[in-house]
Every structure is written in C-alpha cells, then in structure tokens.
Length: 279
Length: 279
Image (cartoon, rainbow over all chains, first blue to last red; front, side):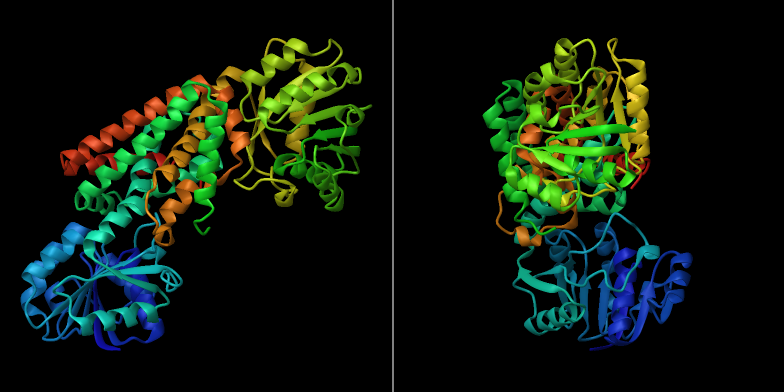
C-alpha cells in the first residue's frame, strides 16, 4: 500500500498503528520518530517500527505516508518543521481528537504537491504510552475522516482504504461537524469525569463503587492530550457543558421537590437512551 | 449458620444471595418470596432457593434470618406486613443502598425479641433481575454494616460473619456516616451519569466513544431502585451535586479563559486522584 510510512509520536496510538501496519504489511518500511530515546528503543523491541530516529526531518525522508500522532498542539509544531522536506505526492495524516483547528492550520501551510487528510480513529484508552500499544486497538471501531474543499479525492480514498484495512469502520464528514459531534460524545463525558473526581472530598475511596470507577476511568487519561483537545474545541465543549448543567439542574429540582414520579421518569429516560448505545 | 433463611425480593441481589448462600451451605433451607410467579419459577430453576411463595407472611415462617432485598420504599412496606409474625430471636437484615431512612423506620417498629442489622453489600451492576444473578457477585467487595444505639452486638457479629463467609470485606459505621460517604462515592456518580445521558442531543450515538459508554453505564440501571435511593438520601445527594457543580464551574472558567496551565493542572489532579482508586 505504501513504500515507507513514518509515524511521528509513538504513544498508545502511534505505537499501536506501527504494530498494526506491520502486521498487515501495509508498508515496506515503517519509520518511527519520537523525542525520547527510550520510546524508540521500546518501539523497535516490540516490532512497531523497522527504523527509528529522534530527528523528524530525517524520519520523513522519502516517506509516502506521514502519520502525526502527538498531542494536538505539537502536531502543528511538527508540521511546520517538516513541511519543507515532504516528498512530492506524499500524504500527511494526523490522528488528533479535534479536527477543525488542525486541518485549518495544516491546509493553510501545506505545499501544493502534498495531500492532507484529517483522521480520528476512535480507539484508545486512559492508558498512555507505547507500553500499552496493541495491534488490534483499531479493529471494529469507527474512524472519522474529515473532508474540506481542499481535500484531494484520491488521497481521501487511499486513506479510507488504509483505515478499513486495519479493520475500522470509516465515516467521512466535515471537520466542523466532527468537532460538534465529538464534543458531545467524547469531550463532554471527559469534562464530567474529571470534574467528578475533582469534586470528591472524602478519604474513604476504598469504598468506591463500580459506578464511581466507571464514571471516572477516563479521568486518569493523559493531561497534556486532553488540555490540547479542550483548547482546540473550546466553543463546542463550553456549549455541551452548558447543556449538561441544565440537565443536572432538572434532576436537582426534582430531588429538591422529592418528585417521585418525576425522578422515576428522569431515570427511566436515561435508561432508554443508554440502552441504544452498544456496550 | 442458619436453619432457615428467607429472601424477600429475588432481583439481582436477592437472587445472587440465594445462589451464594446455597453454595456455601449457610442454611438448611432457603425460602424465596417475590410478587412475580415468573421470578419464583426462575429462582427455583437456577437453584437460588429451595422453596418459594408469593406470600411474605408464609415465607418468613420459622425463618432465623430474613433478608429484605427489594427497592428501599418497598422494604418498609414489607417490614410492616411481616413484623407481627417474626420468629422470636430471628434477625432481619436489608440490603438497601441508603441506610438512615430504613434503619430508623425499622428500629421504630421492630418487636423486642427480634434483631435488625442494616447492610449494604457493595456489589451489583446496571443489570436488573434474577437472570443476571451470580453466586460470586459479592466476593472481594466491601459490605457496610450499620450500627446504632439499638443494634444488638450478637446479631451484628453473626451478620458480620455471614457476609465475610460470602467473601466480603466488612466495615461497620453509623447509618448517617454510611449515607454521607456513599452519597459521594455512589449516588453522585449516578446523578452525573443520568444527567449526562439525558443532556445528549444528537443522533450520532453510533459514534459513541468508550468514554461515553463508561461514564454512562450505570445510567441504564433500574429507575425504581434509584428513585428510592435518591428520595431517601436527598440532602446528602443535593450537597454532593452542589460540590460537583462547583468543580465543573472551575473547569468551565479555565476553558473560557483558555488557561493552558490551569487546564493541565485540573486534568493532572484528576489523574492523580483517579489512580488512587483501584481499577
């Protein structure tokens, strides 16, 4: 599918991509780039990459596909550093969890002869780093690709085939729609989860219920990653937090009034909606 | 341990208790009481009970231990119905998720010759009903027993031994303290989870992230059960919701100001606290 794929950023997603690409033999060579020597050694050892370098300019040399897999604000920094040395005809993708900010920045600066496709593989966990990388991380999950006026059809189709080849279900929408949908389905749950854990003020955490454990699992996620997501999808997330606050206020008022029927209805509605989401 | 144990209410908890008691041979006979004939048939079939009846007065005849395992408001109704026919020297326990309301009501009305111990086995799931009953549901989890001025020492020790025999770690505190701690560790996460799912207003739920699935798993729980929990622990839950709202407001303000360092700190603090909770 590609001669040389370069992955910049070898965390959970970058590392898992390396493993998955190698397993599917989607490239003759996979090159890994990271700031940390330890990560590079580990990536080589688990077989996520064939060759490693600390230098991104050296890493992207002759690559047909460059995958930017760092936290969002770093994606932009790295792109600025490598954009002059991209091979003619290559495709650049990123795997950040917000798309409007990144695609605008990259499309503004990208050379004519290079294509860009924004990608959001909806896989991951609260675990951070290459030690948790798995070749089957992507299988069966959705991957959102974003299309803008600048998106080149051929590159989009090729990238679609790439993710489908890794076992993902691909959906193509605009970066704006992506950020709107995901602010509600992923960023809001994160906001609620971290606010919840930060509101606890007792020391009896050993008595934690399964409910607390589940609702706050994602609060253990990488703070840098999530800071960047929040900063680059600010307005959508603020709107969703507002909607959530209204919903919580309804519950609070029902409880204040000891409204037996109203509480039942509120809980029942939640159950019905929740059951439409696959486990 | 007991000659005859009667379980009133054969849902997830009652059914699992039957299976677990039978497996540990803690009673010569286990009697099951339910309003629904179908539940009784099922309980007999899976071996959760030895004998069944729709009639609670008949069910408690000669029982040494009576376990009230219905939603909280029903516990009180049932207790009023059976209290005149309790065997001298028997022990009554309930397994409701709030303790102050139930223990006050029961202790006010309980006959002299009978003991009561409030119990909260911290096990369960969003699944409802005997079809999900498992003999190992309790193993390894905490069980909170509540002690008041009226609690009889001998009964308390016996019930402690009972839960420990089923593999639970027992903690003994006052009903007031129980309700305060659990409002923060279990009832608040529930409030947040149902408010979250009820605030979603888009139809792209197929794109749900693992984060949304986890944070809202408990929102699929039994509405009646949770209505009763909320109604009987109102003040504590309202206070905890207030604390949570303050925490969410801090996050919102950091985001409004695009406070990069503040957001990192907020997410980092959540990660540190979350990591002290066992998976």
